[in-house]
Length: 99
Image 1 (cartoon, rainbow, N blue to C red):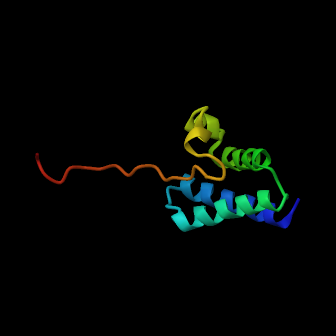
Image 2 (image 1 turned 180 degrees about the vertical axis):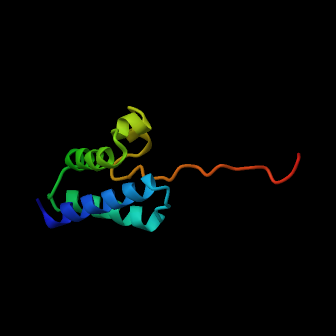
């Protein structure tokens, strides 16, 4: 496996593990990984399909389900390649007034 692809996979796993633990993932971390994904395709190191399959494997290893199960079958319509569906869960919001 190429060094770049290995680095991309490590970044996915780090992001997904942080999200699973309830931590935030800075947008810059996600954006850099997405840029690396695009570079891997441009350099001919991997195809979008190969990278998406590998990202799904990292997601499955951390969350116990695939991206299609977590985000819906059409998740790629909302997150076209090279976007990574790495968002933290919404924080609960409690009203501060009686209104």
